[in-house]
Amino acid sequence: MIELIVAERCTDCGACIEVCPAHVLDRGHAGLPVLARVEDCQTCFMCELYCRADAIYVAPDCDRRVAVSTEDVLASGRLGQYRKHSGWDEWAEQFPNEQWLMETVFRRAGEAAAQLKAKQADVTGGT
Ligand code: SF4
Ligand code: SF4
Image (cartoon, rainbow, N blue to C red; front, side, top):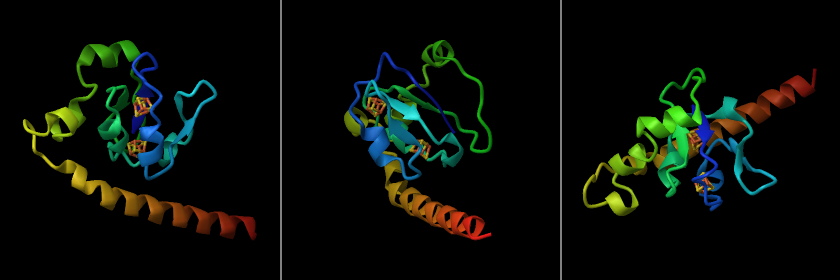
């Protein structure tokens, strides 16, 4: 699940907010994205992939959050690793993994999850 955004690295481009298929992120008052609905995170890594500032850390555990600090993540060297190994942007020639082709699958999954959530809200609201 998405765990944190390193504020000092964020350039406020808004890409992560736009690409997240589960609408986990909102624009905060200072422009910085905020983790608004972490429980909806699909651990799809799309936000990491699109963050050219390598400011986002998504942990591979999709069931529960893990406690990590900004300092830990910065020291781990994991920031930007997924984007790099996926052959994204400046890494296109070196790492032609093409994992990004999964984007459509994640988007469809996000839409299906949102529809289900809306349906469940209707049922709950109607009782
Ligand atoms: S990992 Fe995927 S679902 Fe989770 S916040 Fe990032 S883009 Fe959204
Ligand atoms: S994609 Fe990265 S740089 Fe852009 S708003 Fe999100 S965290 Fe900030």
